[in-house]
Amino acid sequence: MGKGGGCIPSKRHRAAAAAPAAAEADPPPVSHRRERTSIPAPPRPVRIYVVFYSMYGHVRRLARAVERGVGSVPGARAVLFRVPETLPPAVLAQMEARVEPEDGEDFIPVVDPDGLPDADGFLFGFPARFGAMPAQMQAFFDSTAPLCRHQRLAGKPAGFFVSTGTQSGGQETTAWTAITQLAHHGMLFVPIGYTFGEGMLEVDELRGGSPYGAGVFSGDGSRPPSKLELALAEHHGKYMATLVKRMLHGAS
Image (cartoon, rainbow, N blue to C red; front, side, top):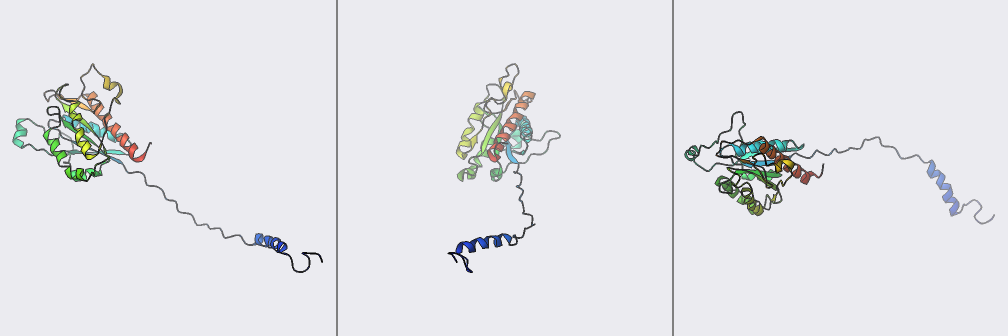
């Protein structure tokens, strides 16, 4: 017989013969076990802390408008806190301060500085005292020194809304001089610029607010915030919540 013939097949023939046998082997068993799929949890709501001091109620009303603006953004919520009072009741009475909640208004808790790191962003509101924040608000920021020491608020965005008696009473400087507080904490100052559109260019109607943030003119204390001023404050809250949400969860 020739080469490669006979009873003992060559290596090539053995490989060819083994191929069909492998093909005829039983296929591996098919598993009908359903693979577990993990459903990602929805992102938690963005928390914007609205921390304010209000002696005559003007800033409190702006804070409520800011709260509505934050709440208008899906996946965002505002948490209101008031700053502790530092003046004795007798002095507040002489100043005719309105420290109690208005009729039908829920009680707003006093802010705890230790809880501030839980927020994703801040909007601080306060009236003007000679073009700057009042002593009550300054005392609050002073109480955050331990947080500053460890930079626990670093990187968090924040903005301001204010109340002044007149157009020249510090609508811009009250916010401008408060930026130093954010700088030492390493926080990010977020102004609103002219994002309110035509409302920022209104000249026929008296309006508080500036590119630094929402605002109100209180006059001698008897002038309540106008509809336009409340709309600007609401826009401020919506703008901040949208920005912080984008920072945390990306564009949506």
